[in-house]
Figure 1 (cartoon, rainbow, N blue to C red):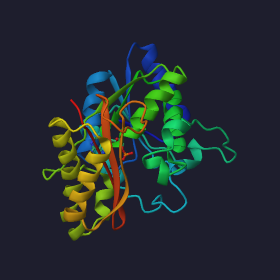
Figure 2 (cartoon, rainbow, N blue to C red):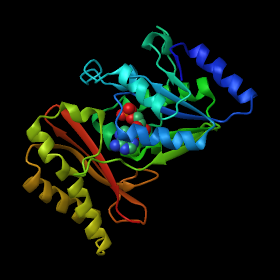
Figure 3 (cartoon, rainbow, N blue to C red):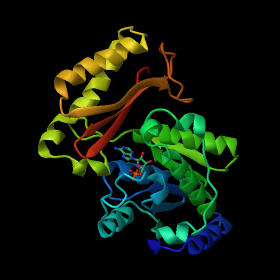
Figure 4 (cartoon, protein in one colour):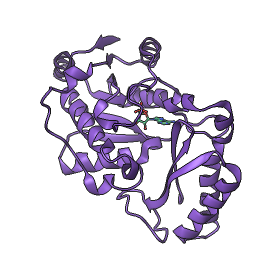
Length: 282
Ligand code: AMP
């Protein structure tokens, strides 16, 4: 596995691979790998003849009071994991090589970035779209793999790719969870033992909504109230950021389930902000 930090060298290598008839799968990440990242790498390995993994804690997607400096990092371990999953290239740039001092161009999908996580993280998706677009340009990847864990992110990236005719296919992988249901996240390490013990209730609340939807409940407000009541009882350490029912593709809020409804949430547990989501209909 090659490790590159220089964007120009990344482009040169990817161009050469395309010339040689290879196809490139890209897995963008911020590192501190867990089994969720590993599942994306495995999928990327199947989808392209060359697998590029990027590891970049992208400063432009963090707000001023967010955890950019505290974000957990372990590059040596990450490199070993990427290698063990068959990555051909690990791209680990410095922020200074990705963003010129007078960087002034942004990619935004404002209508899809206003709600859900965007409500409390107003610049987040602009940073995500911009860095992902840069990675698409640098690699000219044929396919890129994202996680369902960040549902809003992959929905926005799909829209960006469609609207700007980016020649890349977007693949989304299911959420990888701990045995108790907690979605794996690099940020789970921020939780105390007590918070961690309660955290699986987040997913259990969403499962309750899906069970009610399967029994025929179509009213999004009723489903939402049922989850909030469940959390009030079982997740007392959680502070709600949002709990919403939206169209899974457009992310428009729904009053009534429409056949492709997603329930998504963010809850703060001490220092950690946990996100999760569930498709309410099969
Ligand atoms: P991050 O390093 O947190 O930016 O995540 C990189 C990619 O891994 C994103 O596409 C995430 O959606 C995905 N990802 C993170 N956690 C999980 C998980 N538990 N299951 C599946 N994919 C995940």
